[in-house]
Image (tube, rainbow, N blue to C red; front, side):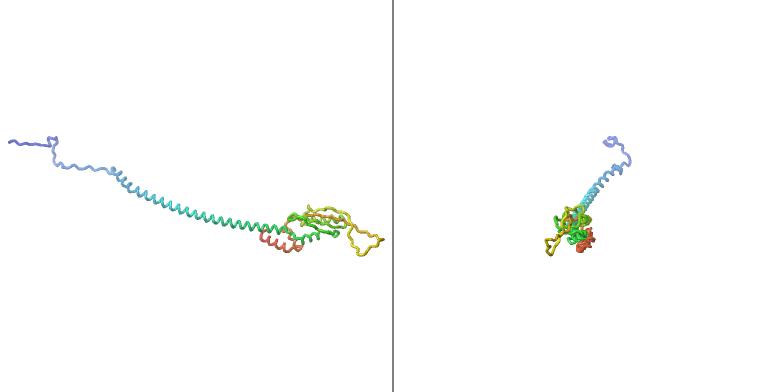
Length: 245
């Protein structure tokens, strides 16, 4: 009998060697080839966390900003109320100041007639007689017309000059309107016989016009006090102490 010796390895062109492992070992990959994978994994974990933190931070900032805006709005409203209160108080102060100025103006324009007549009496020369004083106009435009008789033209001229120097009257508007010779009025109690001639002394009839000056009463307090206008002077001094004058 014949036996068959078949060598499959030889037929395939492979030569068997001793201690040839039955399995082939896997080759190990370098670490640098695994970095992208690790980085991707880390990024996959961290990016959502970072995004979440940023979102929460933005929400917190928005909440703080809204709270700050509310606080600012409240402060603006409070300041607005304060400004309105200040405006109301200033309006009241302005009204009071206006009333005070009006009151001061009234007192400052007052020149009592008692003081004016005393001033005329102090300015009139001995040789002049006043028969009448007439007033016209009002406010700051009061005119006086004085008429009477004097011993001479010189006395009349002196009277005009004395009136022009008075602080109670306007010097530029104090003038002599007319002056004429006239007999003095003499009252005779007994009847004069027909054969008796009576000669009447002559004088000068005059008419003088003047205007009250616009000098404030606060600047005439000394003169007013001398003439007995104590009440007006007291009021003016009170206003002066308060700074109204």
